[in-house]
Amino acid sequence: MSMNRQRITVSLPDYLYEDLVRQMPQGRVSRFVARAVEKELMELEGEPIGEFIALREKLPKKTKREIIGAIRKGRI
Image (cartoon, rainbow, N blue to C red; front, side, top):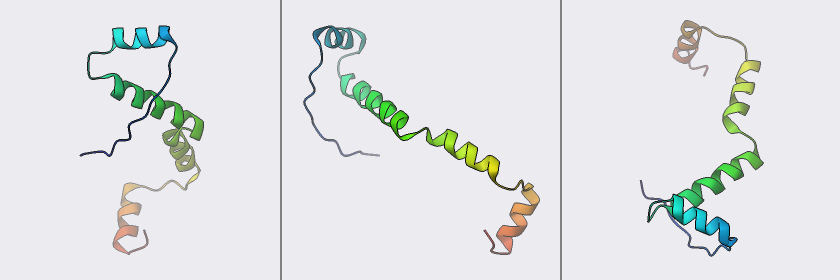
């Protein structure tokens, strides 16, 4: 799957840049930075999996058989 990309310029302190290029194989810096930004944004927005689990725990408990029966009746 191809993902659209946007080229940006980011300023980093020298020590961070030097650590980054020393730790990352050539050609992997952009991927590392993208993942770090994504992780930080997810933390700002809230953790979606945790929120889903918390919501799921509030829902009525149904057995697999009850869920399948509801699906067959067109209720889900």
